Each structure stands twice: as C-alpha cells, then as structure tokens.
Length: 118
Image (cartoon, rainbow, N blue to C red; front, side, top):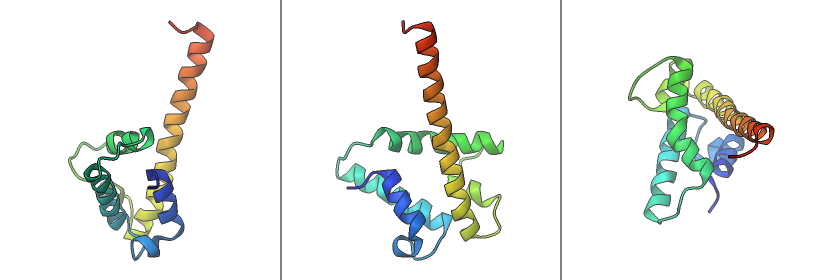
C-alpha cells in the first residue's frame, strides 16, 4: 500500500483517475476514506501521515487566523472561487506545510549540533 504522500502525488498528477475531477472536497473525502481503510486494516500510520492528520488542520487554522470545527477542505474553500482552485491551492498549502516541518526539523538538528545534545 502506498504512503499518504505517494497517494496524494498520484492524485495531483491524475485527479480524474482517482476523484473524477479536481475537487478539494472530493480530495478531502478520499483522504478520510484512505485513513479509515488503513485503520480498518490495522496498518500503522507513517510519521508523515500522523503529521498530516494531526497537524494540517490546526496549522491551516493558525495560518488563516480561523478557529472552527469545519474541515480543512472548507477552510481552503473560503479562499477559492471553485473546487478546482481549491484543489490546486491544497497542494500549494500541503507543500508549504511539509516544508515548514522540514525546516523545523533542520533547525532542531542545527541547534542540537551547535549546543550539543543533552
């Protein structure tokens, strides 16, 4: 079974094959189903999956300055005129989200190297 980022990349390249159309709402439902199926099959989430499912929504809320219980797809649609634009914006945000985590991890590693691990 492919990991989350592999699946998302396949969808980015060929949304019609996986979702029928480029739609952030359909993508949201697909990824909810993906998470559910892994849970049902008792397949442990990878670190990247845990980061996405646990941290992406709160990160978006902070980025947009919104506190809500609505889905990340609906948050994205607040800034977009249609589902296709929301779909495209999701990938921009996802790249930014994972880049942020990479930058934080690199900063932690640099700090540990400079100050020694304790």
